[in-house]
Image (cartoon, rainbow, N blue to C red):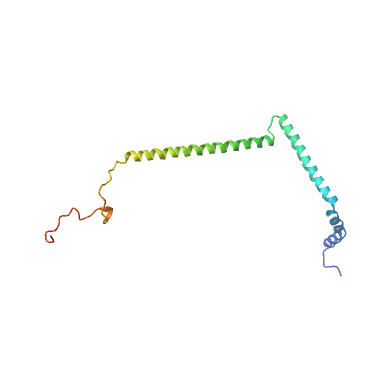
Length: 141
């Protein structure tokens, strides 16, 4: 009777049994780490040289390279920040001048008031005696 696993799984498991120990041993060795580091270094060097070559080619064709565009974008961002700061400073100055003019106008419109020399009474609203100006009733006098 045949095994319950499909053929592809049996082939994979047999191959995994034979190859996995060698691969694991190699991956954990110092030589593998050195090989990976050299590969990364080689890749970064390759990328750097390709970027230099493309930059030179674009400049020969009088076209901007990516580094030129990035430099311009940074310059634009700095200018936008500076304009925003100047706009905020101007708005602050205009607001302060407006508030000062309102305060001056308010002081000019305000009539000069004399202070009372007599103390106010303690009763009633605003210190006024509501019955002060009423004539006395004839039957209670």
